[in-house]
Amino acid sequence: MNAHTMRIIEKMIIMLHEYKEEELSLRTLVDGLEGSLNAVEEKLPESFYSSWFNHWGELEQYLAVGNEKKFRKEIIENIEALEGLLSNIV
Image 1 (cartoon, rainbow, N blue to C red):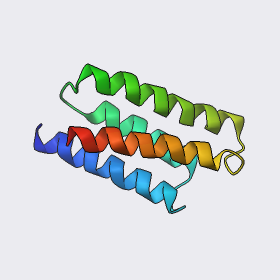
Image 2: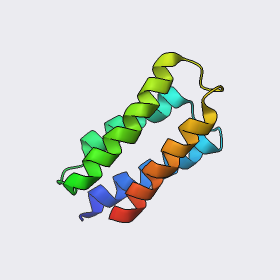
Image 3: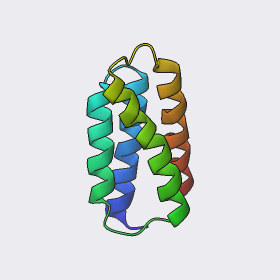
């Protein structure tokens, strides 16, 4: 994995942590993760993408519903799954 991709993935992990610490809004997190993944210049394992979009898609759904506090537990579960996926590829 090249240095550019590693920096992006490290930033994504930081964003996930910042959301859990309530330093980022869900909107900022979802947008930031999308932009970061789009900036990766190399192909990641196919299994990563299917799992990623499953959990990231759920975050988008919670964002669309607009009741972030009510679904905080479910959001955190998805965030922890995303952190695991990112940690497994670095």
